Amino acid sequence: QVQLVESGGGLVQAGGSLRLSCAASGRIISINGMSWYRQAPGKQRELVATITAGITNYADSVQGRFTISRDYAKNTVYLQMNTLKTEDTAVYYCNALINSRGSYNNYWGQGTQVTVSS
Image (cartoon, rainbow, N blue to C red; front, side, top):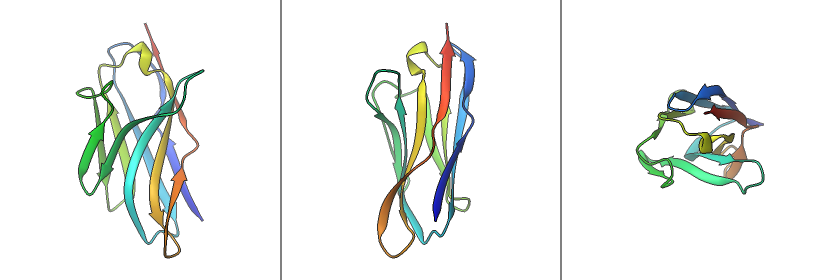
């Protein structure tokens, strides 16, 4: 069984910072890409940032403000969020492509709430 557990969400004022963490645990042979998504109320889930083999990509809306990084030894991915805006308010989900039984499958975390107040 593979689990992704996120932490680090909370309430912050506009202009502030938060750092999200997502740790993968369980029977893990290897991890390919790891990503962060978010879903605001009434909106579809959207890709925020992804990291694969050290290469990062960001949504235009967070480029220059958010940084995704990964600790390969700890099977953990981070999202450093700076200069937060009210429109960043959403539930943030971790996603990873994990090989646990000889083939890669997509796994999701339970989500962590980020609320940015004006």
